[in-house]
Structures are given as C-alpha cells and as structure tokens.
Image (cartoon, rainbow, N blue to C red; front, top):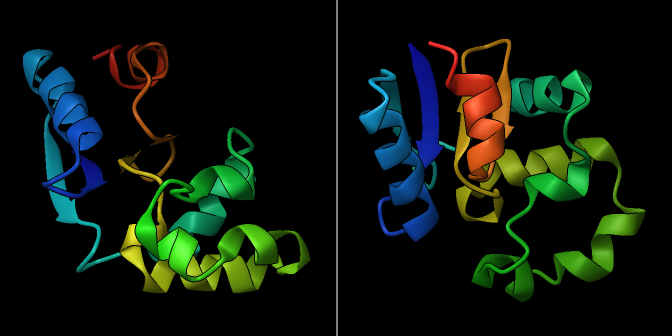
Length: 119
C-alpha cells in the first residue's frame, strides 16, 4: 500500500488519484494540510535523488507567496526548508506519493507510469 499525500480541492491530486484508481493501485489517502509529510519522509525523498529541495514547494500557492519563500529559499538551510514543509502542508508540491522506498512529487503521467504503473 502506498501513501498519497494530497488535497481534495486540488485538480492535480484528483487526476493522480483517478490514474491510480483506473490501474487498481491501492493507496491510503492522507490530507496533506492536516497531516503534512514528516521531516524524515521529506529528507528521504531528497536523499533518493530524484527531486531537489525547491521541487518540493508548491510555488504557485498562496502560502508560498504570502510567506515570500521565493525570496528566502536560496538562503534557507535544508533543515529550515524541510521544517516549513513539514509544518505547512499547503507549501508542499502535491501530490506526494510514497511506498517508503519510491517517491513521486507532483503528477506527471510518465513518472507515475515508471514508478507506480509496474503493478
């Protein structure tokens, strides 16, 4: 079973869930706003090497703009950035999907097919 960190009002999350559903991929839905990913999970995603820190941020979100993260990210330590992401689910790019070993951030069909499409 995989964990799907998403937001019900997010079109991208709905598309990703539909993609998983039509392929019979079982997942546990986690409300990213109420239960943001842990620091440990976020660090694990970064260590896997497929994503850079800035790719974990929802750069088009209101919270990102309100907190002026764009201006601060370059001078922020990884620990500070991961701390913010783990405290503010709306700062996270979504969906974040993980089985504990493999991870995807955002919804790109090619990536989902490569990571989650193999059954």
